[in-house]
Image (cartoon, rainbow, N blue to C red; front, side, top):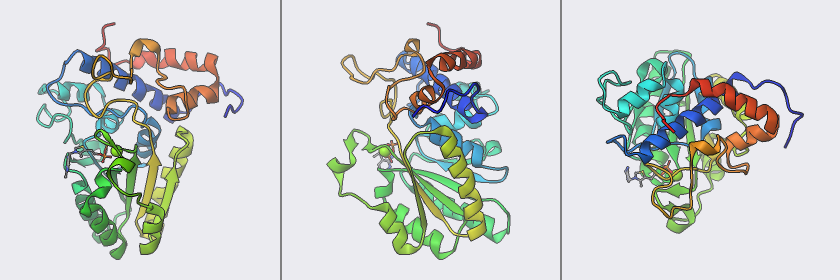
Length: 303
Ligand SMILES: Cc1ncc(C[n+]2csc(CCOP(=O)(O)OP(=O)(O)O)c2C)c(N)n1
Ligand SMILES: [Mg+2]
C-alpha cells in the first residue's frame, strides 16, 4: 500500500536496492558463464537479508546455507571481494579457496556456510551454547529452507536449543521450493507454529516483504532472545525470483526472466521486495533512488 511517497529511503532500504543491483549484475555474469562455481542468488530475499544484516552485532554468529550470496554481498566490506572469490582469485573474500556454497567471512559474523542441508543447525547450537557458557551478550542466527527443514537435524537442533535455553534464532527461508519441487509435491504440510508451540519455542511469521518492518522485527528478536534466553523460530515467506542456481533465464524457453536492462524491479507484485519499495515511494521517487544506487555498481557488467 502507498504510504504518502516519502522523500528519502532509510539506509536499510537503500541497501536492499544495492543488493538487488549487485545480484542482477552477477546474474548477467552467470549468463556469460563467467564463474566455474555454481552461485545461488537470492533475488527476492532482499528484505530478509538486509534485516538480518542490520540486526547482528559484533560478536554475533551468522550461519548460512548454500544460498549465502546475498548475505555475503551485504556484509562484506567490499562486495567486489565476493565476486573475486567466485572468480577463484587469491584476492577474493576467502582468498579464492571457498568459492560460493561454503563461503564465510568471520570478520562480518558469517562463521559458517554449508551446502549440506540442515547441518548448519547443529553447528549453530554449538555457537549459541558457546555464547551461553562464556556469558556473552551475543546470539546466533542460522538460516535454513523449506527443503532443509525436512532433515532430522532441524528438529534435533530445535529441541536441543530449547532444552538448553540457547540464544539462537532459526530462520526458515520458505520459498516453497527445494530444487525443482514445491512443498506439496514432496511432502505433507508442516505447521511450524504448532510444532514450536509444542516445545515452547517462540514463532514469528513474516511475509509482506517490507524492508523496514523486517528490520524492526529482527532487531526486536535479538533483544527478545537475549533477554528470555530462549530460542525463536522465524518463518519468512519468500519468492525466489531466480532459478535454484546459475543464471536466470536458465534455458532459452525459461519463463523466468531477469535482465538488468529492465530495471531493478523483477516482478510487479508484493512477492518482490523492490516492487514493495516502489509502491511505498512512488514511481518518480523510486527512479531517483534507482539512479542514486547505480553509482554502487560492481562495475562488472558491460551492457
Ligand atoms: C543433506 C542434503 N541433501 C540433499 C542436498 C541437495 N540439495 C541441495 S540444495 C537443495 C534444495 C534445498 O532447498 P531449501 O532448503 O528449501 O533451500 P533453497 O534452495 O530453496 O533456498 C537440495 C535438495 C544437499 N545439499 N544436502
Ligand atoms: Mg526452498
